[in-house]
Structures are given as C-alpha cells and as structure tokens.
Image (cartoon, rainbow, N blue to C red):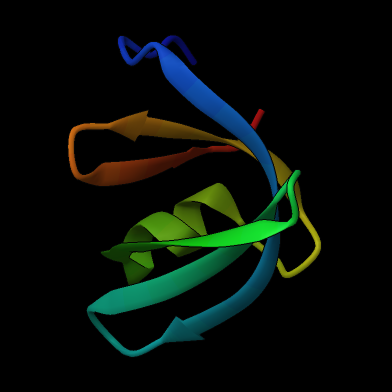
Length: 69
C-alpha cells in the first residue's frame, strides 16, 4: 500500500477496544512511547489487526493512520 504521508513510525499494537462502529487501537512505538488511533471497527476487521501485530504508523496532520504491511 502506498501512502502520501512522509512521517512514519514503526509500532506494535498493544490493545484494541471496539464497539459496533468505532475502534480505539493503541500502539507502542520505538522510544517506548505510545500513540493511539480511532478508526472504524470495519477497518480493524478488514486489516485483521491483533494485539502484538507489527505495523507502520503514518502520521499526517492530526491523524494517525495504521498501515499493516
């Protein structure tokens, strides 16, 4: 998947909290610091996100976009 954002951070999923419409996914980044992203539950299911997954966080403006490669 190609992205237009220039800032990206390697991260690990630490928790996923979902309801029918939205999900809050928290990540641990290298420092170790944490970041979070709110996305639709449908997107979490489509990406097959699981706690412990390694992925790239793309940071653009105020959004944190998880990209699972």
